Length: 128
Figure 1 (cartoon, rainbow, N blue to C red):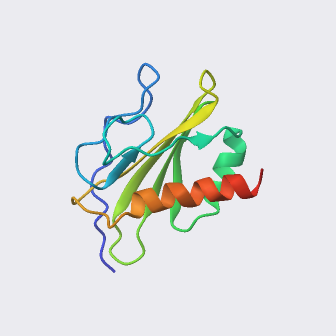
Figure 2: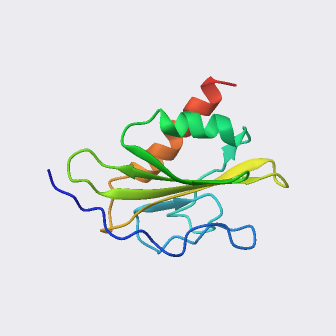
């Protein structure tokens, strides 16, 4: 089994109500981005507890940090062990959950980060 986990980024978290910008590579999506390549719709508002249950139900997931309005998880790909950093920020002012999902290594993720966020969105909508 390969392991391309890379180093955990040091720019994660919420700063002034914003998640970190995407690095300009096609392996990142961010609901707060204005860039067409990385832009994705925010998730519908649910409790962080509900969101955590959905995230934990997905394979190869580790919750790294959790607060009242922030959740950070690592997702590992099955074959090569690549790690994606996925963050959720509950924005009560906008009544949405902002999301950022980015691969640590490489440039292309073959759309995996976008697909993962849309899978989480469909699980939220199925429960509401």
